[in-house]
Image 1 (cartoon, rainbow, N blue to C red):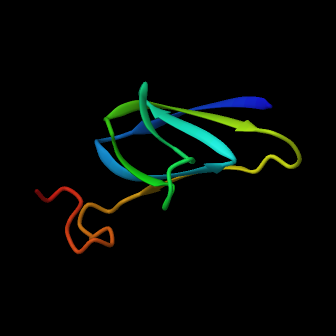
Image 2 (image 1 turned 120 degrees about the horizontal axis):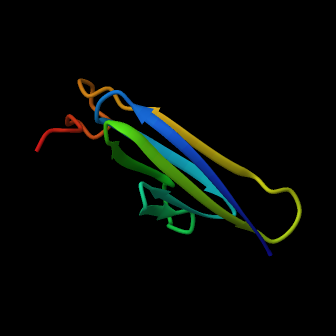
Length: 93
């Protein structure tokens, strides 16, 4: 089994909510040192996280047994004035 690590720094001009989609055979995602989730979870692999103003460190760890090694990582900024599919605003209490 092989393991790969990918790091990315995302700079945010202000705090902003993003949807994180990461995929692979087995992968873990950490944001600013906190575990966001893993691809082993059943259902959607999408996670929501609020980026802090300034630099945000993403760390993706992926393991694979054999063959082609599919891996993906995508950030989508969520517009704070539009619903995120749940019928409420993301920042609403």
